[in-house]
Length: 298
Ligand SMILES: NCc1[nH]cc(CCC(=O)O)c1CC(=O)O
Image 1: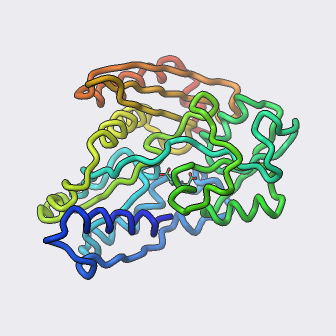
Image 2 (image 1 turned 45 degrees about the vertical axis):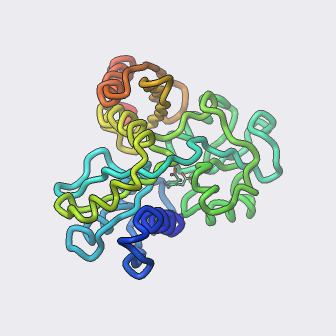
Image 3 (image 1 turned 120 degrees about the vertical axis):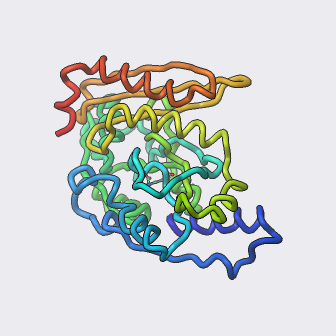
């Protein structure tokens, strides 16, 4: 998936700068991260989102690479000094896909059925909707998880529609989940491009492929996450959409990992106040959860 995202970025850069860039100017380098190698534990136990990007950011700070392509969903809310993400590509489908081994939909899954996922957000929401189901840890890349499902390790799994589309694996989807059944992760489906803040040449090249509407939505969602100090140890979901001429609407949820507690909020603001809206709803969720909130961070 990372490679598909890098090719998409390269193609967009080439198309935006036909006179300034050609294929030979853009070499694609793959960097294996610590996060890619954790197969046996939930990401939340292993040390969080940062594991997917640490090595990449280090390579960038050392000047080995000039542009980094990230799934914004995997990015911490704060970036290292000197590195910025000002460029967001047009956002893909934000929904999660429900994938079952025998093609039965979520509503038809029998009581006690096993759902494989390593995402606390997906685990908590699925248990909130269907407390009769069981959840087991499912790690590895998209291909590995689909293989585990085939092998019968679980009866169903949940994956981002965006990743499946980018890998051209929409064939495995049983059905997409509505946002009511499964509110997506903050920034799900969005690719962000990082560069060194002082590299003005690259900054200029990237500005031409930035998709402003997607960037505003993600900025709003990430402001909410930042207010909740969202490590991936807390089940948090959030999704912003642009409405009308100049407004933005944010939905946000905070759950307990077992899905028994759930807090939801929603609000709108002018697009220019996207950050303030995210911050406000993040605070609202924190107040709603009250003293229970720290105990979510187990
Ligand atoms: N944590 C892994 C990860 N990071 C981004 C995506 C999907 C693509 C996206 O949301 O942009 C995935 C896989 C998944 O959640 O199914």
